[in-house]
Image 1 (cartoon, one colour):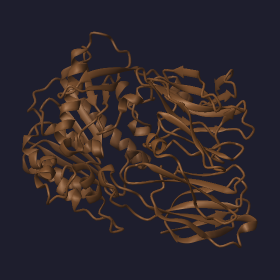
Image 2 (tube, rainbow, N blue to C red):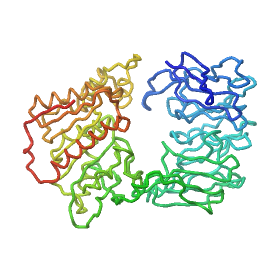
Image 3 (cartoon, rainbow, N blue to C red):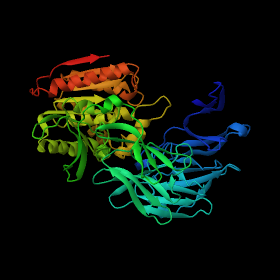
Length: 563
């Protein structure tokens, strides 16, 4: 539970706007009269599509309207995408929001400040189905004039006229291209209508993963590609951009495999595009490993791609130690031009490339009903591919994963002895235990997730739970394993890591456990001292086992624990 409050910057005076809610995200109206916010109601079973997150959508008056009552616009509705499925009109007198059903198909609503009564826009079923699958960066965007709401996913852009309730397809992505997200104003939710007639959209080409921006004429649907490079400007889940109030200038975040993220400027016709910040000048003076896309076929014949980060000063023909960094269902080939490949801080894989390692981030499409075995079917042929390319040394292979990726590490170790060092971070390996966890709110998150993934309760298909739980096969592990976990992890309880450690210790396998007390799930949010200690520990772990060729059993029969 929390309050939503307004703070006067000049005086520090605090005015409580709403009490007794669970505010998740909020949106201030452009005219400064209201703030809308989504109050989380917990988690609900969404069937085969996974969990649903219902919210109350609440509007609170501020400024001259603060005497008006707080209004609950919608109760226990799955607003989607979370945080971006709500948008004020430019004049601040209308609010649009999207609600998804159990099939991830959305319905669109508009409320006006004069009566606050939701009105559903009757979008044809064919278009609602075509718009399914919007992601977190794909906002609802209003036209500057305020009568049209633009909605898009990776494949289609639709305009909804809120006045007469008509809808039309403005454009579809070109074959082999995807629309990442519409560019627009961060403060108002308005779309960038460049030169008065064209929307600006961030794009990605499927074959090359090159990213850029395109203009789409709202009347003709004409698609004009403005820019496309071997750069990473964002994803469907996270895209940083903003537009000036007059619509003449835009800014966006951009990076490459060898250049950290900085802000870039573009004018409305994209004749002037330039970098405007250099937030980490020391990093720009360093040397980094380059990246490339690779392809392979899974054990079942499906074609899969991955992003491969090469060591600094890579020499063709020389074989290097390889670290595999997987995450189930994640399309990591899209990150091939991301600086550091995966993420920032301790997730930046240039930390390994600068020390002579190659890193493979495989896309990992899997069957969740048989995820343990399908992970091996997808990932191990990718390792074979890097070895066959003459890059990876088959005697110096490592694997590392976080959270569901930590589960993936265990899933691989119980099925192969090819890896010579492994790190499980924030992970687990016992699905029945996860099924029986209860969060502080009383929510059984594990039950909702696992029933969606495995398609049954634990009692309806007991073997599916055990067959996909590495804990029942730990006697097959022969790879030295380092377990890293936050002692205050609120996503995967430390008990999940404790279990794997004591079981491997009982089996006489080489395992070390570093538990960082007071830290939560993601290392990037840890204290600087603990982030540094974690990185030094992981680097030493891999250095000691992948730099020198040793026998597979050279490290067996030892266990230790660190706090």
